Image (cartoon, rainbow, N blue to C red; front, top):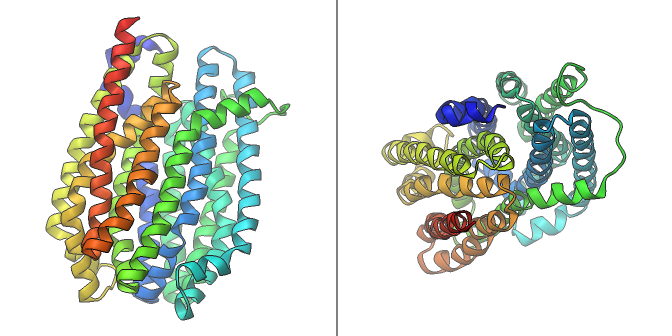
Length: 441
């Protein structure tokens, strides 16, 4: 990508890379919501709660995908900018192999830990049965999910974000069809939903892999010799994204533990339903973040640091407006939204109450996500990791255990908004520090 083009059309550059990523992310969210719709309406709230209990497992896999994908693609972007396509392809091939090996080992380890996980969460009976049925299948699906995520990031770096968008559209449609057939028509229950996801992800990965066998593309699958330096830089670059997702996994585990302790299955179901909306906004934020990383890394490498900062500011403003829209919509229609999932009146009331607290989250989450990914693109993994750790682990864990003990379910709703707000204050300080350092040189 030409630096002058970026400088002359900053908004166009952001949208060019962000919109396909956002569409892909939203369609991924829609797949999750579709699964929740069929699970809630055709199986029940207990099955919905059981799936939510295992979300920390998903967050770990997403962490691996983002770590390797973001870390490797940033290196790859710099190499493509330097016209070193062969080396870029080697970095890509090593990144894919690394992600695959880590995920296979993880699936085996998690499978062996099912019983201890259920015991800690105090899940038994039907809840434990649903959990086991669903996640036995998903442990085969999640490695494919990671590969798909990683492949998509490299396709975007190669300048073809629309390919990922088309794959996501097809995946979303196919997932809805398979959910309807397996869950609604054939009555396969929770395993049916999991098998639908597995089939969709397998097809998506095969299609994305085919892209990298085309010799006309900048990045291809090639033979490579394992490069320790590239591996270290990949993990270092993507460490903040991994920390963020790992922190989310630990925090979600803590949320589920607290909900089961103070509220019970209804609380977990309510948190799951509200979480779909928050997850959707999070995917929009990450989509903008992924769209931002490519031009920012190029600008930073070219010494155009002021332009990189301007791209960040513009992206933050866009997300603040979107966050305000989310807050208003879900405050007004939160109860009706909850009714889509076939939940009881008590659960719907919890969801409606939760959205009144989470309005603040929509205003600050995008700011924190963008700043974290911006620092990664600049090569400042330390600042990025600090933001990710605060919002996903340190502050969130403290508030998760303290607020519910004092305020019950209200305290559960308060934890995330308080975390994002305080993290945003730290983000402001980090941005100002970077600006001072640049101006002093």
